[in-house]
Image 1 (spheres, rainbow, N blue to C red):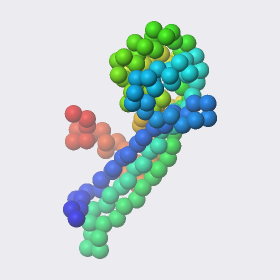
Image 2 (tube, helix red, strand yellow; image 1 turned 180 degrees about the vertical axis):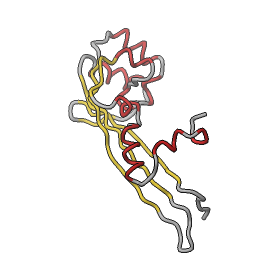
Image 3 (cartoon, rainbow, N blue to C red; image 1 turned 135 degrees about the horizontal axis):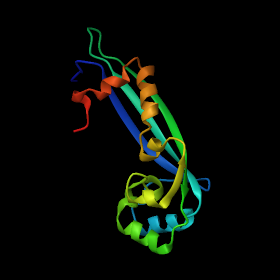
Image 4 (cartoon, rainbow, N blue to C red; image 1 turned 60 degrees about the vertical axis):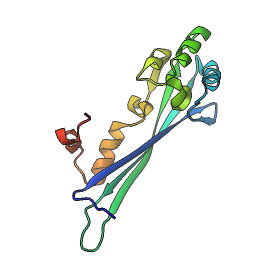
Length: 153
């Protein structure tokens, strides 16, 4: 297959929301999102974000190699005591349907979250602090990701 010419980082992340001892993914359906919000309003749960960072090494005469780091970063999310009208309006935006736990902290849902105890970036889906540590553990310079050729466009 095709190889890489320089060391290449490959990142994968996904999240699950733990509430009352159960794991909750994305609700997908408005009715499910409303039900979850009715249960979690005024309460708290834990958002777990799983991370995997692979380092693909350039091909050598013997073949190619890879190393990886994996980890989970968790944060407690405290929800406001929201009203039924607020729940209905938020779910109607469509935003919570494709998010673990039926909420975001970087969109409209931020107004319904009273606070986050832990890494707020992990709640968004990527702990940048974990990424920096994992990049270093793989022997790579994290600041290289800030170079213009690697910047988000």
